[in-house]
Image (cartoon, rainbow, N blue to C red):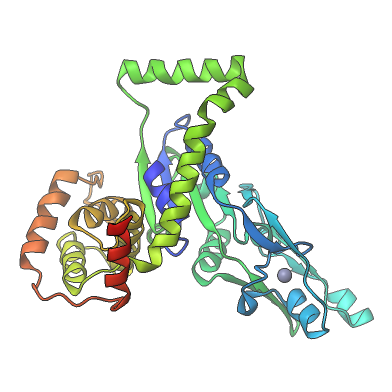
Length: 351
Ligand SMILES: [Zn+2]
């Protein structure tokens, strides 16, 4: 779970994670903790959509209008937002609403921002995503994929950026997600309570230490948190330079074929996740290990279920298939990010 969350923090292109598991396994604690680790961002200070002042092509319609009028956009630095979506959320609450009466009476376009506005460039947490209205889940996943929210009513439209890290949780005992929706969560992890008594004791001890002295607990763990936060920022900066070869692509393709995965989403997600993992590990090219760890997070919810059988991801089987795929993949190496590779590698070596 921690790995899946951190990789999404390194690469916002991955497309979110679904955490499946029983209650009381710190799913929401982990997601909240991640938001606190992410670097601060620059925003248009008074924009409800947290527009990026340096991303002129992703501005909301309001900021765009202000620039067109010659206004200067005020800039502020802010921690990224953690937005919690309630299970009872309706479509209007999620996407926001256009005030049609005001448009007709005063000729003004007025948009009431929804959850997607608050979540832009932040982390959107959806607890019990399987209990949410299917239509609302569809909207969330659409927005997560497109990075923009467009609301149209009676010929009037408003659009704003809506890019966020989507973290959903569910307890499978309370009902499943439709396979179409499952497949659109990039990564998936299955959580279980720990069975080792020593680890269970450690959890109780930490929890008690926190309750007795929250401030002292925070101070004790702060250096570790800051270290992790720095490592995420470094990996983010390294990510654009991480390369892959055609052989890696064949390995991924043979792997997904051997697991009879539907469609092509899994291949793309494995590649993006493997690159994020390489960046996290301080490397500038992906390795077999990156592909293996990425596949472990990408395949669990995409395996076809046999009747009367649980679809379980078997790590040994995965490793075996990966070695087979690697052996069968063509040997020639075609580098992607071309000339940047060498200088990047040199820089890494000279550090
Ligand atoms: Zn804006």
